[in-house]
Length: 78
Image (cartoon, rainbow, N blue to C red; front, side, top):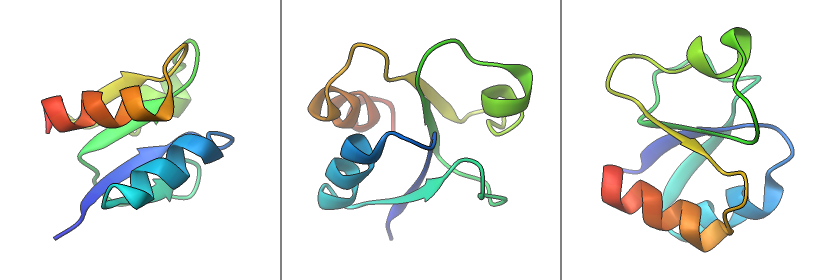
């Protein structure tokens, strides 16, 4: 089963890399399903990240990270 990850719109390089690593990646703005992780860039806002991340969901700020580093963070947390 693929691990479901929600990602902020505009992080296409990270989305592509995570797909290649075997993650199922959905756009944060369009996703209504529970996910195992939320990936965003910059400062989170109540409406963007916190509302999408349920208790126990990994939340990763991709600011300053490469796609490979984000994948490594996911591997460690999930």
